[in-house]
Image (cartoon, rainbow, N blue to C red; front, side, top):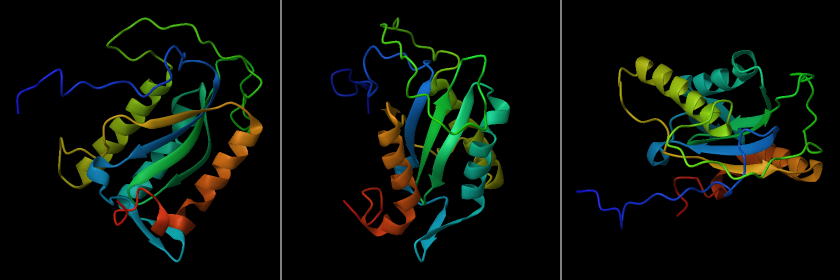
Length: 189
């Protein structure tokens, strides 16, 4: 199919004008390519990771050692998607072991210049790096170089306060127990 800009335009789902390099907490969801159940299965309300799911979990847990301005909070690998809270903190007093969210920090809402490149230390650069390394490792094991693991893009929500963070943490922790009703479950339209 030939590219038609009227049909094939992609609009950003990011908050217009928000600086995603800002210190703050973000809830992200990444889905597998074509929502394939690649990472394991839910058994008795618990996620059982397979080898590919274990790779995703391992790379997520490596985040603080690879990226000093990033920390992780609650997260879950599901059969065909991943939920996690990532914290970006550019302050000099950043403590990787501090689970409090930077809810009181100010967020810049200055417009960003249009660019084809991801900004260093941004949420999108973080997600791209995470997807890249997990895809490379999974495809090496399955001998399938160039095969997509993740769908394009990702979903994010800016976590603005502690109440919101608590609800998101609860959602993440509860996700395996409600898998059958999940909108991302392959049997649900």
